[in-house]
Length: 290
Image (tube, rainbow, N blue to C red):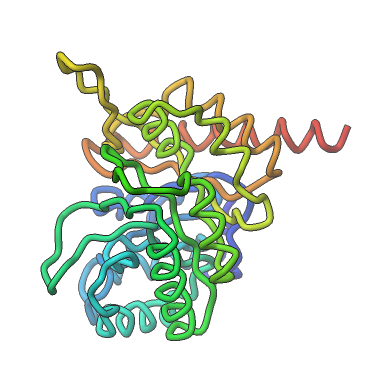
């Protein structure tokens, strides 16, 4: 149960299910806090010096631990790291005192121009050296460890030489950062590229995974075959729930976020999805205790 006192709860994120805080649910979450373990927000939506977003986030922070999840740091870009972006993130961290801070193993900018997507890296030794240096620089600037999330992808580079799961693991270990493991992204990429999602999930080191994401996706039908798109606009599918069960059985209990970013349903639907994740976590806990 979330704390209901009128003071901030401690920063650590519990090994329960949380939901993303989105603008249409600001009032419901702050006026009648639902039974979820924590909240996650997209960091960049709160970079302003004031206004409604920060007002509601600070109100929600009274009731829940918060995780900051970035989508604009562009860790894999060839551009220099955006120091103004890092400065604003650092200020938000000081203001909200989040339990976790994360971004993506991807790039989204070049020559100062930003794209509205999280694009995959070529998985090569050169790219690995580059992303490790960027994560280290980010952590040194912020003065804390971050989590890096595996992306969903719809193309692969022909000259990639390292499987994504090995690349992600090596980046985390060499940069000494943690991993945000998105189970839906693993499944989407596995279907799009023809690998076994269980091979990926079993290869990720348990001690690096500090958060899990679950989301819904969309299947696009084409003459050349189906493609899965990570749309975050529907419920988690049965196959992803099963992969999640297997993953937490191996890793142990982990904070788990229900991601839903478009075609937002009523808050009650998000709470239902979170309750499903909590039931799975409870069964894993009971099995471990038996």
